[in-house]
Length: 371
Ligand code: GTP
Ligand code: MG
Image (cartoon, rainbow, N blue to C red; front, side, top):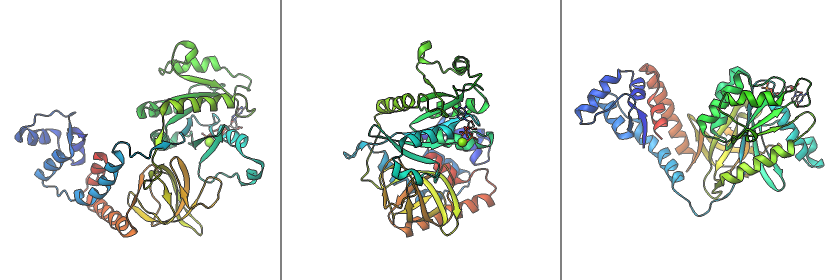
């Protein structure tokens, strides 16, 4: 895998790129600063420069697991629900839109149970499940928008029709484009006086999002989260785009996914909202995420109900972790808790060493990048 450029490696090792180019030249490789080099070459360069490359062995465990996942079709792949992230500028109505979708979806018996447990929910529309993730629009939450774009299959970009394209709209567009994810635009608040959906479409073209009626390929649906107008059309579009993606996962595998958010909760200790992306997560599974490890002690679904297992595209909240993991990090299931703990401890040690060595990025970062 070619995953680090000469320039990036220079930054990680805190050394001039020309030094690295020289070493590569001595071993017969002509390289430029933007050239991508593979894991082994990076390792050789690092050891030439006197770095002890001790990350290799312990990370092998993780690498192996990830490689297994990347192998083609296990024969057990089945359709999975799309993961849809709702993004947009502050106050443009992302949470209102999700609330509206959920309210239309719950049966009478469930109604009391609707509380925002984990910022992510699965709803069923015409027998098809969709998992939604909410994100904040405030400018301080750039990282959340970036992560949201990365863990999603489809992005709904909410733009208020009375306000138009704003800075965090543009930022969200850029994250989504970088992640290569399809965008559906929800032009919201069309019930409001001063709403101007046509102006929104015009502004979107300035960011290379041309709506279908103007000859482009971007689906835009004018909606009102407040009045419930056109929400069904929006959901139909989500299902349509999702069908085209042919999303599958193997529920029989060990789970792998991402951390949506994490916090310490009274009486529960460290808890994390996880999105299971592949496989099935079970109570009792040993997981690692960054430098955090643990055995899943309890697991609750998006309605606050205790569950024992969670399949692909399911958001859950778990307890049983040593510490709170970092939102946006991956998690994987390991063989047992001991393995998870040892790996987490090694990562922690390396972090410390790296800090002491005053490296700008730790070697762990290097190897995460390389995976
Ligand atoms: P952040 O999470 O802070 O970025 O905001 P948000 O995008 O989640 O917006 P939120 O759903 O909190 O809505 C912001 C305000 O807009 C609230 O006062 C809503 O009642 C109002 N609002 C949302 N959707 C509509 C709509 O369709 N029409 C009208 N008139 N008001 C709306
Ligand atoms: Mg909100």
